[in-house]
Image: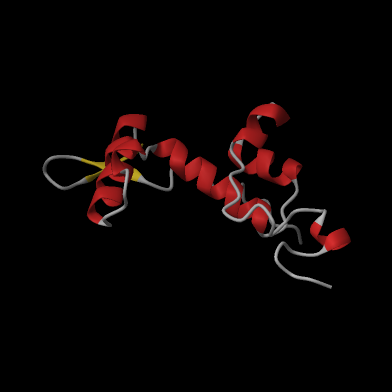
Length: 113
């Protein structure tokens, strides 16, 4: 017998909180995310914390997904980018040689074969 239960409605992962400490059920605003990211970066002692933002999270996700082997279509689906050119701008590899295709041909820099 098939289950006719409808899927749950999408809800925000992070919600706001009233001054009284009650959860609002509403998704966080872009300003709230901005303040949280900036505050967390400052508290962690990151150099340049003033430059962190919600987009830092998006770029970090795209970069980590790419380095973990996700293809561009998968990254775009998760980040909701429509343009491949824009999505590619979010991929910021920490080690450009780690996923560089020439490494397979000539080897990693500094290694003699």
